[in-house]
Length: 244
Image (cartoon, rainbow, N blue to C red; front, side, top):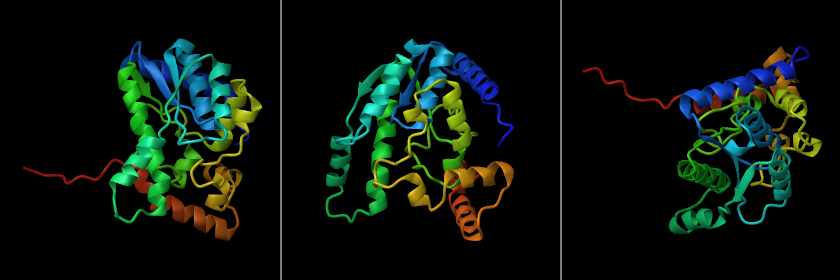
């Protein structure tokens, strides 16, 4: 990945965002869920450069108390964008209560908040003449590290073809605060870092994706398996093809 030109890719992505909005939402605002991590920070910064700060709305969505919400506030202040805070805890708890005596799996508890957050982003977007930004990157998508119908969706996606390493390089190119670009990724739901849950580093994953540098056999097997079983998340929903 040594040949990655952060300046050129940043400029190209900015042009792409600008062009996309001219065709799919001329005059609309980019609505970005701001977690305080690198992906939402870089996405918001790209949108600001493409559209101007006045056309970017940051939505902070803690689920109860969020220990690092100050990072999300710092990002909005650094970019000069409007922000709103919508706590999703009551909505999440309401769904769990409404499920009554039905057994609730741990994965359900982990994935429900991001799905509620995405519903919230679309509620804000439709009320503010907006378009929802997807903030996923290639590395996470490659191994299925996203929630289907949660953070995996959106109206436009600046980072989906960029690895974690490349997203960080763009963040530095955009002049974002180092504590946001280099922040250790934590899902904020399970209490573990991304790399702890995955069982390998993003550096190793990115080198494998971009340069074909194979990690140790056990790690390669884990990456390949995750990519295989999560491929459906990146595809359109299968449908029955009726032929009249």
